[in-house]
Image 1: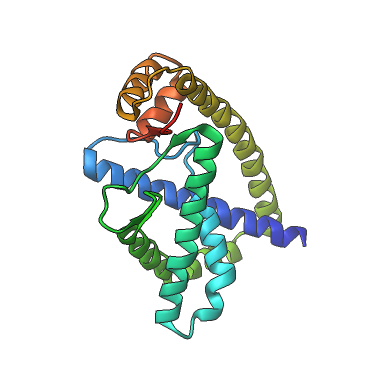
Image 2: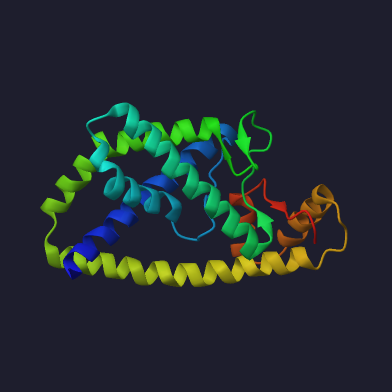
Length: 216
């Protein structure tokens, strides 16, 4: 049981890292500069790791039908992204990404083009990337998997604690603003936060389109 947990944990970290790489590459393509994407300090985006685990564990039974697998991938990724956006906004009083400018979106939290991209990505994960990851796991010794997964877990927990502390500083700064104008608040908050610690500056660079909540 513990061995399965360690392998699942390592699986989560592998895809969290690959998701971070994809975000960094996308950001570099659009803005021609490196940005450490994600709200955590380390090179990982947990939402991708969670999505990969869910897709692999839940959707593998739909391998017989590409159409059904594609639709279910859109549904799973859409729900995950929507509720992640909702929870983060409730916790930190800020919108970390916004698809409101997209033609087909739901409350700015998910959009059709993003869901299509995630669905294609899910197909690639299940049919091409997962077999490579499984082969890698077969090469690794069980004791090594236990060690590396637990070490990564400790580092990850420390990262979460530091990052959440930083995000709460961002939230507190936003709450202290008096204006009730989203654009102006966002602009002033970014200017103020860029003069603070490295971690806060990194957070702002990672989410340049962060928007404050509508009522402060």
